[in-house]
Image 1 (tube, helix red, strand yellow):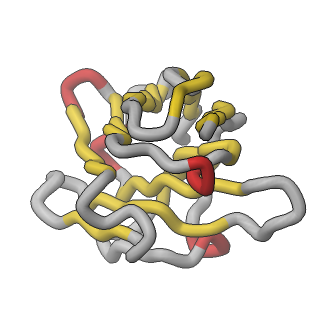
Image 2: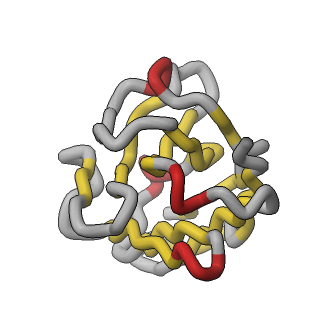
Length: 124
């Protein structure tokens, strides 16, 4: 099963960039569709981006389209989220998740494994 650990979060000024990484220590990443979600205090967990098994298909929330890029390196059992032009409203805990299906999903309830999250804070 997937054992996911995120890293790369931190404090950045508006307009800046961060790259999040999610490593699967179970070395099974290639078996899963992967997604990134985020949750701000008092808000529900929301979809950010998803990527297919091979990386050929990607999906984004409208709020991040054109600013964020999801990618994966199955040989390194790692999925990435490059975040550019960050805004204060991007502040949240970011989670990576694995879905044991070839069909991508924007629904958090359809993901089977989750990391512990990494905090991203964007100051104005």
